[in-house]
Image 1 (tube, rainbow, N blue to C red):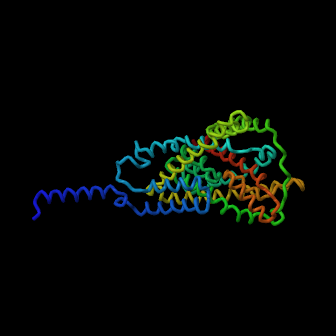
Image 2 (cartoon, rainbow, N blue to C red):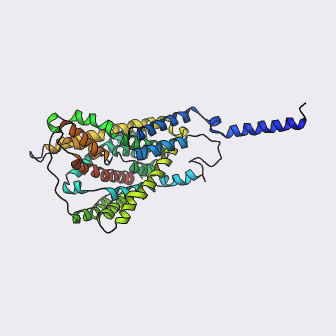
Length: 389
């Protein structure tokens, strides 16, 4: 016979089990969380199986899973909950701390020789930034504010850190969608760009052989980041955080006397920051903030800006060739590399070029507009920040 004591104990146990269940993610799961977790699995699959930007897509994909495990409010575990660990780590994204540190590492691992030996490549990098301003105007037409449009437009530069830096200043509420869009299209460079390159070029243009780049002296390599930071930052002072760190990292690499600093910047430092950036950006895409009409529009605008950037880069080379003598013409297949996805865009130029001429190596030539695109996207971000910030 069950006593009153036993009944009270069972009621207590049931109540505790009920409370436990209420705190689990299963009890708080919504359809949006499941959708985001499926998106995360796609990101991880693309990073591991297809090797599309694995250093970015794997941390971001895992971060999306973390950010979409539902929890009972007030546990201080969510990225948007004040005092949580993830919230502290996300501070580096919100305040634009991580992107300049990544630019420091990029500068320390980038060889600007191809650009220094052929300064004309800077124009190709500049032409490809048209995608940024095309997306900016399209976003305005769709009803986004000027600040939101500027943050969305930078996706066309195919530079994730720059997109995060600018959106943290102009549209922090859209940062998750902008960052995911930027990194997604960076990863899909080998898929998106080749059809456009083939569409815009003739069979004769695809087999143009370019002159071998001249040898660049060590003095030129040292002077380039010094002159570069002075000229670009005087032109766009609001780009100092990105441009300053980019050129500083390159000076560490090329000076020959700060090897340990350069190795730290392009090795452990950039790896740590990439992990923190990827996991926190991914975790910020909680279903209730990410699955919105605005996010879908941002993805569409991002795709359009990336396509326009590729179009402009290739078409600019074709136009430029009209003013160049035979033997000095540029292969239009390197026009795609004007976006900032280093070195993936340059590799695409190489792969498409080799498809039509097995002995025509375009990689070294394509690196010129590719590194110019890094500078160009940072300058464009500085311009937008200066006008809209």
